[in-house]
Image (cartoon, rainbow, N blue to C red):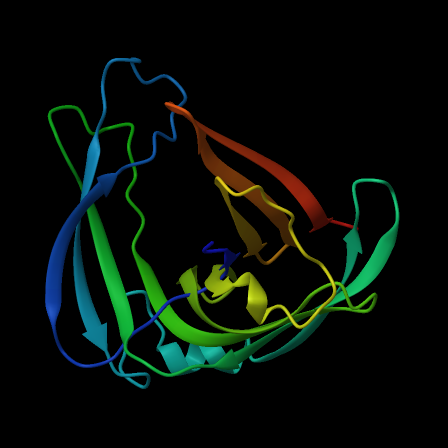
Length: 215
């Protein structure tokens, strides 16, 4: 059985290559016709950590303000709490800048955001010893005061006591999300169970612990 952990938070980068891809662009207007889908084309370029990005800062500038530990209060669904420490350390690998631009016939209500991805090391621990991870991760940022962290790992990488029970026909995933802005820090650890019963595929997801705004 393959069990993975996903943490959301940052990105990667380095060298001097460029690639193109296509992804869905967000509708920020709230009044898009339901049968219309706009698309954001994207172009990726690798940068050195001390090289200026089109966003107006370098990856080194970004990491200088982010490296360190943030102490948070983790809330369990049943109402109990525990202290959660999230530590961001500089990682290894290339810094990737993704430029996104809207294509299509009607683009006035769409915005495609540029983003830089920087590789980091992410450490997540809880004082009740349920969670203890030390992971390679990615930090995605559009500005120095707004970013999201993501990472993946085997559940066996958790040195804490928490475990997910699965049946023979199931696989489990931890999904950890942390979004940080100038105003607040929000995050959670969720479990997702997927499997197949006969010809029917199924999936379920639930929050294990969260650190809400103001929590």
